[in-house]
Image 1 (cartoon, helix red, strand yellow):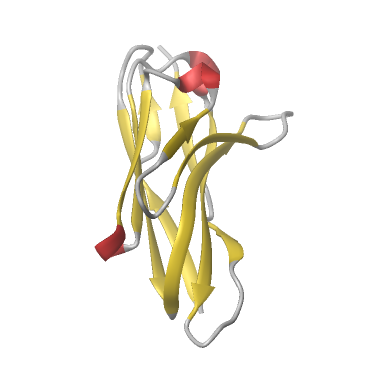
Image 2 (cartoon, rainbow, N blue to C red; image 1 turned 180 degrees about the vertical axis):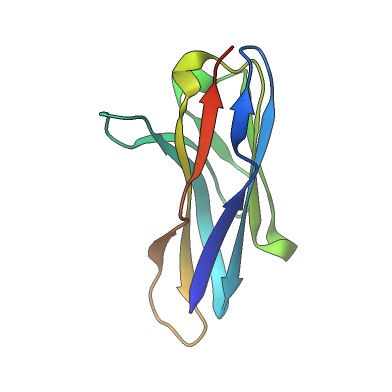
Length: 121
């Protein structure tokens, strides 16, 4: 069994910061790309940022310069540092990991349960 558990969401004022964490646990052989997505009410889930196992990153244009994705491969954990938060960043944030289970032959996507981020004064 593989689980992704997120933490770090909450309520923050505009201009504030939050740091999200997502730890993958279970029978994991290898993790390829890890990423963060978000979904606001009434909108589709959108990709925010991804990071490969070697540390290459990619960001959605609207968060470039404000958000930073990082990972600790030894801990199977991905982070999202969010600075300069805006009300339009309000959403449920989900982490994603493309990984191969121990004894498995293929990589597949796993998702966390989501954590709420609310930016409001």
